[in-house]
Image (cartoon, rainbow, N blue to C red; front, side, top):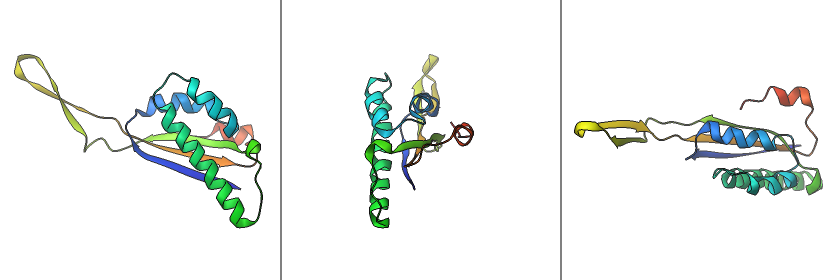
Amino acid sequence: MEATAHARFQRFGTRKVTQVLREIRGKTVLDAERLLPMIPRICSTMISKTVRSAAANLVTQSAKAGRAVDPQKVYIKSCWSTMGPMGNMKRMLPAPQGRAYTFKRKVCHLTVVVSDERATGAKNKGVKG
C-alpha cells in the first residue's frame, strides 16, 4: 500500500531540496527522521514534515482498509521536487547607477511517496530528482 504527501509552493530552490532527498530516498521513515535534523540545509525541516505527513497518510489509509502497519517498516519509496511558478514572485535588486535588476524567487513543489514494502532498485532508479 502506498500513500503520498505534497508540499507545494515552498520557498526553497529545487536543486537544494533534491540534494537532501537523495540522502533519504529508499530509507525507512524512522531512519529519515533521525537523519534529516543532521543535514545542514534549512529545507530539511520542510522535508521532515512532508515525510511525517506521508507516513500518517499511510497509517490512515491502512486503518480504513483494515490493515495494521508497522511504523518500522514504512519506507520512502520515491521523493522528488519540481520547480514551481516564479512569474508571480519577481523582486527588485539594487544595481549600479540607480538601476533596478529583477530576479525571481525560487519556489518548489515536493512530493513524497511512502510504502509498506521496500522499493526495489530497478523501480527507484528512474525517479525524478
